[in-house]
Structure formats: C-alpha cells, structure tokens
Length: 164
Image (cartoon, rainbow, N blue to C red; front, side, top):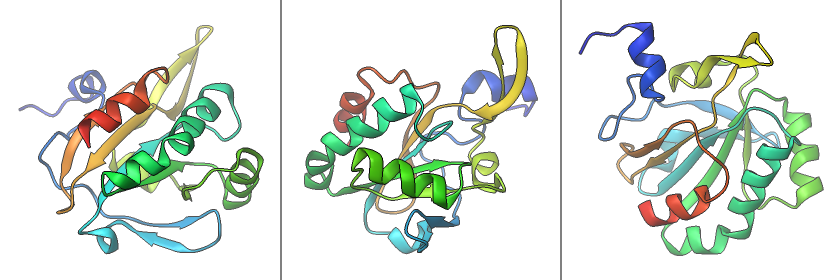
C-alpha cells in the first residue's frame, strides 16, 4: 500500500489498522503518574483521543465512558483518554465531571502523531492542526483490535462496548 498523506488522511487511522501492534507510549496522567501502554499487556485497553478538555463534545464523550465504566470493566478492559492538554487541565476536567479513568497528557504531541490522529482540521474556513477524535480498542497482546476514526460522540460508547 502506498503511503501518501492523502491515503493516511482518508483512512482516519493512518497506517494503524486492525491487527497491527499499537505504538507503545509513556505519558503522565492527571494524578502525575506515568502510564506505559506496554505495562498494560494482558488487559484490553480503550484508548481514546479527544481534542480538548471541558469542551461540549469531549465532555459528552468522557461522561459516556464514565457512566459505562463498570460495563467496560466487566468486559476486562480499562479506559485511557489522551489529549494534548496539560496534566493540570486534565486534573480540573476529571474533578469537574467526576471521571473514573485516567486522562493522559500528550503536550509534546508525540503520541497523537504516532497514532496518526494529529490532523489538519477546518472550522469556518480556517485551517488548523488538532486531534481528530479517534478510539482504538487494543487487545490483551497489545494489538489493535478496532479503530474508530472520526468518532461521532452519540452512540460511540455502544460501538466500543460491542467491540469489547
């Protein structure tokens, strides 16, 4: 498969497709603790990337994962939210909405780039770079089981549960 920027943009998940190894990372969560993906092997991971703390769509998405957290745990999975916001921003967002899972800070954008979710976006004709809302379901062996590119928040939690 040719790797062009156009095909990466169209696929939503770049070159990260179902069955591929999920890129490892080591990020700081909202409590200041380091979270390393490879240390979570043996567990399923719902890794969701979102644009910004405390914005309407991101809040709705986070709260749907919060409200369904027990069901996700029953399926043997954990949830990790990732955005380029700071640890302090994540801490405030988590406290405000009583989120029950870690939010990981990727301020240097290494992980959003590794997962091909840092994209050119457009709002009112203005182009800018930002996170394309994307969720990866990662299996117990660290392989991507399912990529949900360009996530629409409504109904997304149900899609993730069905995949687990």
